[in-house]
Picture 1 (cartoon, helix red, strand yellow):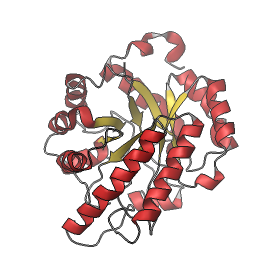
Picture 2 (tube, rainbow, N blue to C red; picture 1 turned 90 degrees about the vertical axis):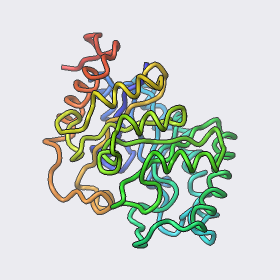
Picture 3 (cartoon, one colour; picture 1 turned 135 degrees about the vertical axis):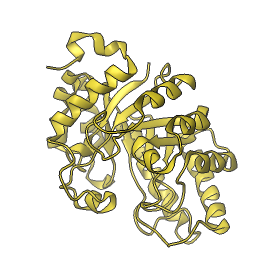
Length: 293
């Protein structure tokens, strides 16, 4: 059965004592784990994070994004990009995560105003082959997030990602689909999921406006049926609810969140989980101790 998580960026982009204090309540609500935003690796105490997760009875995934000047698309920046991703892989593993997801091809918001070039594609393939080797050595999976055209010019659809993975040919590199981005770019969310198939290693449930999951017009039944059809729901892979606190300057700028999207993070966490349990018919949610209050 797929595991249900929530990205801590609903509260903050930090991973410190304040964020660790959220964990017991998230476990009480019924989440299986949390997604750790690794945006500033130097500020993360992996040992403390791992202990806090264990104390709360939660597992974790991790997310990140390459910083400016670390694009895999640019041969002059590729070495730095690979090193940054490898650093995040090591930190994620130290925190207890087996999956590192996010947009790792090029920095979010790097929009040259044109389509990707063959040179960028070839450079990215080279970089991801090396990243795949690093992930394999660490026993990790790296899941490349497909973003909408307003956040990147590279990798906008599931078809793009499948073609890229065929060129990279590294088992440790997979696809990460997010329903917010899919709602912008895909003709059919269900068809895109089926196309990703066995390459799909991570999923974000995010409403069309980044609000509470289930409160908008995303085709959730189609998403559920497609995930079931490819065997994702019967695996131990993750489905993670994701929204962003508008108080995080770098995130607000990258995701264009200028107004309150959710009433508050806890309402988002509770109501999103209730909807995910309902739409997925997740047996773990039937346990009263895991339904929350």
